[in-house]
Amino acid sequence: MTKEPTPRRRDAAASRERLLNAARDLFADRGYDRTTARDIGERAGVDPTMIARYFGGKAQLYIAVLRADDGPNPPADLLDPDRLAALLDRVGRTGPGPIFQAAVRAYDDPPAQAAARAELERRIVAPLSQRLRDEGHEQPDLRAEVLIAAFIGVVLARRQGTFGHLAGATTDEVLPLLEELLGARRYAESGGGDPAPE
Amino acid sequence: MTKEPTPRRRDAAASRERLLNAARDLFADRGYDRTTARDIGERAGVDPTMIARYFGGKAQLYIAVLRADDGPNPPADLLDPDRLAALLDRVGRTGPGPIFQAAVRAYDDPPAQAAARAELERRIVAPLSQRLRDEGHEQPDLRAEVLIAAFIGVVLARRQGTFGHLAGATTDEVLPLLEELLGARRYAESGGGDPAPE
DNA sequence: TGTGTTTGCCATCACCTGTAGACATCGCTT
DNA sequence: AAGCGATGTCTACAGGTGATGGCAAACACA
Image (cartoon, rainbow over all chains, first blue to last red; front, top):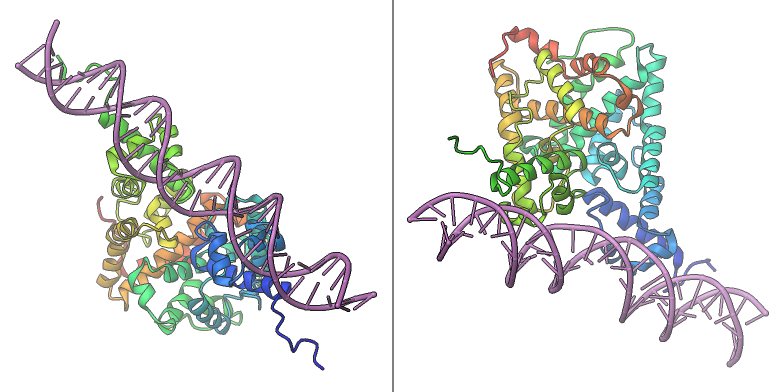
């Protein structure tokens, strides 16, 4: 007998996860401020007050989303063309995770802000910074942050739709420009070769 | 005698402008959502209800700020190193104008969103796009938007402070990386540099 | 000075937010 | 089957938001 054949009508774990998923989607789509607890509850099909019960509040739910979001989990190596393509495609479909938004926006809740910053550093900045350092580039930390900020600017703007051509362009159209922008090939060719074609 | 020697205690024009200035600063600093009408009134030293009277409401005040903000008014030619330096310095000191924020964030008010988009296109995207077109680059529109989105990502992230090294770096440290990122010299080589007058 | 208009202040509204608490119901354990 | 904690539902509240209408003082003008 399986342990869970009966779809329990009362399942705290399920409710928790549904809240988490709904919050992830809504935070990614509208950002933290413009997402209300009632919206999350409605989308999840769970009473909004459960947010307080299970997570302690909206801010802590946001933090939980940050931790649970495996967004660009395979270290987002923006300099690997394949990885860049995968990441761009992913963001184009599911939208930028809350972590990306945290790079550009400010939230009022200090713990939430700190958590976002920590996740951003741990999962995205650190790997790229390490790579640049290994390759002997100067100012690897600063350089990594600039590259990532630029990438985030492009993907956020694309999804936001403020830029017409960028929002309308397909991933295939954007990708080469992003590669050129980030200097993927330039960085990647540690052995040295010809510059990016035009 | 002069028409306005008396500093009129009741001066609608002055109040209007003080509201406009306060709104510009606060919108730039906190964004639209996180700025309340009461904040604006307090900072301006003007009763918040004047916002409704003079502008029609908060959203329309925002639009007025967009139009009045001469932000990167000399066409923000990101490919001219001098202009890029000036712009970066300016943003570092006074913060990104509301127009930049509009590129990455969404507001609920459709007219405000549309106004921001129009200003962004008119003042920033169009000039750069035209330049790229003149220089014979492919996809000048898309390319311009990518470059601008990347730039905005960097300056917003820098000011936001989520990236430690980027926030702590001086303008002089960031500038060369930005030039390299945007390919200022690469692009500029083709056209040579005679900066257009303001 | 007299008069109508402009300008600012005040109280208040209607709405929305997050969340706390009381109450009802389910489901596991004994 | 009975008990009881876990889970869900509902109402309500305190705080804050943008916006409105009324009213008094200050102004421009005759």
